[in-house]
Amino acid sequence: MKPAKFEFLRPVTIEEAIEYLEEYGEDAKIISGGQSLIPVLNMRLSTPKYLIDVSRIKELNYIKKEGSVLAIGALTRHYEVEESELVKKYCPLLTEGMKNVGHPQIRSRGTIGGSIAHADPSAELPCMLSVLRGEIVIIGPDGERTVPTDEFFLTYLLTSLEPTELVKEIRFPIINENFGSAFIEMTRRHGDFALVEVAAVVGLDEEGTFSFVQLAVGGAGPTPIILEEIEDFLIGKEPTEQVIEEAVEAIEDYLDPEGDLHSSAEYRVHLASVLTKRALQTAINRVPKGMMA
Image (cartoon, rainbow, N blue to C red; front, side, top):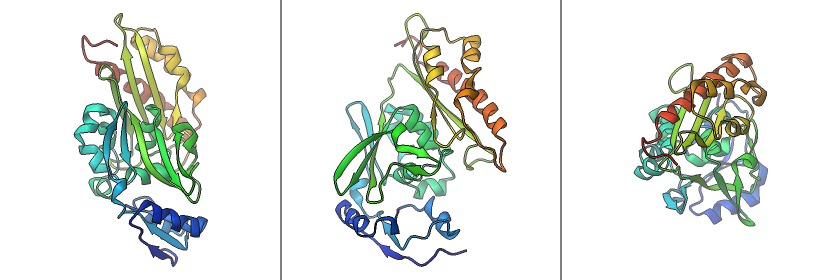
């Protein structure tokens, strides 16, 4: 199939893009890399009258450290994040997770902002942003606003973005150098969307017990799921196999997966349990020796 007829607009500044969004509202769609939107257009699941190509807005392509966060511009491409030395140093979880995003062709075209705005619950970036308790900077006619992850992702493919707004920046908190992190996913084939994915960040104190735990699961509900109950349970406990097994035992109570042609809901729950235990153990093993926090 081919997309329905549309008018193509190409702003070169944020202000110009917002003017177009104000003028055309819900009749317009933002496009940059097109890795998520083009298939949707081709299947005519979306039929906008106007496509606003923001790929020439250079001020939205950057990676920089600002205090305790990594600020990444919405038009930064996946491969740029994957290869960034700044990201490797301050947020190795992000480097690890980006290697799982599609294939090299997709990572060379797809943008960070596009993936976040598309809000596919099986995509890697929403899960990583959730586990780090990151934020999304949104800009529109009334200026900027910063939205925490758990308020940005509403349900399948739906966010709190208004029709006249666009994603400007994604802010990833820097991971303490004394912590360990891990990102693990299960796919049918390499490059496919994950059936389930899990991200973990852990810290251990001087006694070797959990002092910091953050966990998130993708693909097991309409949005990424932060496993707060498991996090709270683990704090102050020793990172033994028995403790981890006990912590993850009731994981199905926190998940809300749907079955589809790729996997049943029950299998997704099973995967979430297995991958959470695996991600925790991997993150524990990556805590620098003699560097307990």
